[in-house]
Length: 68
Image (cartoon, rainbow, N blue to C red):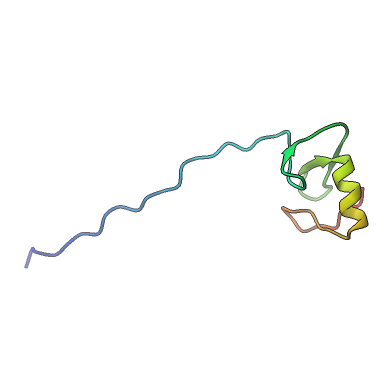
């Protein structure tokens, strides 16, 4: 009764590094002035945040309305 097969260990995803100077709206490096979400403190380009506000978009991380 010892012929039982043991499943292999789970494969974990590789660790990733969070880039501090990264705008999640345009998916690139923050350029110029920044906008910081008042709820979760995520930083965006000010220009991207202004466009997001006009478009009624939400913060990508916490879904708070952008108020730039």
